[in-house]
Each structure stands twice: as structure tokens, then as C-alpha cells.
Amino acid sequence: MYRLFLIIFLLVVLYFLLRQMFRSVTGPSRVDRSISSDSAERDKEQDQMVEDPVCHTFVPKRIAVIEQMGGQTYCFCSEECAVTFRSRRPV
Image 1 (tube, rainbow, N blue to C red):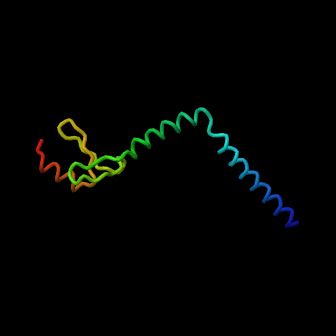
Image 2: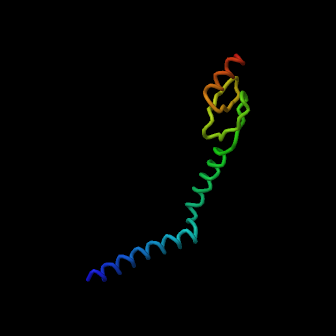
Image 3: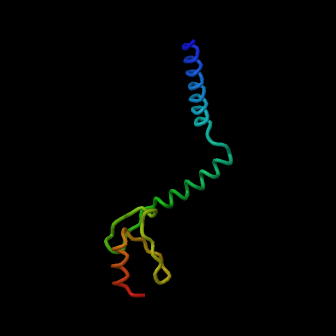
């Protein structure tokens, strides 16, 4: 009796694994592709490396401290660099 339950359980697990494998091979549907391409572009933009104007360190844009000063956008590696930049360059 236990063997029967074990075999049924293993078949169900195998079914879900094969279903997941074939879904990944065929790719997402047309709607999912448009959503994933938009998010991929957004991720690519966020992972773009930007240079800190104070210490010249390159950081990913998604973790940079972004400041608007004098109509321009500046990206800093830390809040300390942003404060230093503001003190050197009064608006």
C-alpha cells in the first residue's frame, strides 16, 4: 500500500518537473514577453554604471545617491560624496 502512494507521489512530482521544464523551453507567452522586455530594459538602465563626480568611483545607478542640482542630475556613491559636492559647488 505504501509503495502505491510512493509511486503516485513520485509520478506527480515528475509531472510538475516536466511541466516546468517544458514551460521554460517554450518561453513565455506574447504578453509575458512584452512585460519581461520592459522590465529587462528597466533593469539594464538601473544596472548602468555611473561615475561619482567627487571620488570618481563607478557605482550601479540603482544604488547610487541621485541628486538634482542646478537643473542637472548627479549620481554619487554615498551621501558623504553628495554633501562634499554640494559644499564645493553652491547653487
